[in-house]
Length: 408
Figure 1 (cartoon, rainbow, N blue to C red):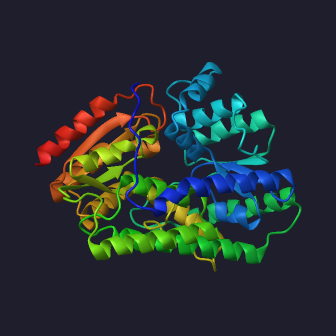
Figure 2: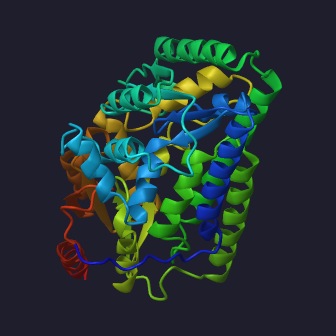
């Protein structure tokens, strides 16, 4: 594959994200080395606020795979995992982290003291089990029930919430045994309060991003979502979101858009293409802006309900059950309708991940809904978000250019 162009950010605040991610790994490695903290490797949507209350450092395997892809380093690790028997069509996010670990290449990453997986993703439970076997570390699996009702978190049946909350309570008991100390109630209240504040700030930022011209594009959105993924429940996340909110507010106040002459506004569905983040900048070269990526709805609770520090376990359970990718497709369709309307999108790009049924489904239902309701067209791009080996950047850019030309 030809060398891809480098991406660039429109905002100053989002350029801080690589430093924040590096600092958290340094702190985790130092804490593990001096015996003051444990490290948990976990799946994409983890109850990190509970882990942080115990002073446990978190490491999200899927995010690390995206980091390797963004650096252009991922292919050897995918090949190593496949050589060990993991199939080509298995989740590349998990294969990348598996190959990285099997080769012993994670020099600056602390080994896991335990691993935490969930059933909400087909691949996570198996992949993290293989990693647990490799590192000889304890492995915990949480069973997340699906949401079979249309609507936000208030529509989730109580028995599903109580079932998940009971597992979180059991996780706390296991962590008490692992750490040798009881749950620090004040610390739990603090981490939940910080997480709720970060999510609230993100909601304020999203409200301002509806402005025309758009003050924030796809590259900045993807970077900011990394903070939602990795740092909720920390002062660092709140500080970052406050600075981001202030920068976006100033751009809205002065009418500063991502591009000088905004012709089109696009919604991006599915994961970002981590090895070709400059694709978002290509839209901007055509006078278009990716005004919103949907992936934050996995983390922020903007659709499913935010955290309640006074009722932490059940509010976390409700939030993670009700996100629009866990259950019936109607919730994702409704969320897309809402985003198209609120962000005044005149086109939708659906990046369909070959490996992920969770994020890659619902294309036809979404396409029919937004076409019927708003006359908004949808472009489907097939591919893989971290595996570049079958990617043809010229072909993808040609499809996007044709799509933009069609809109006029």
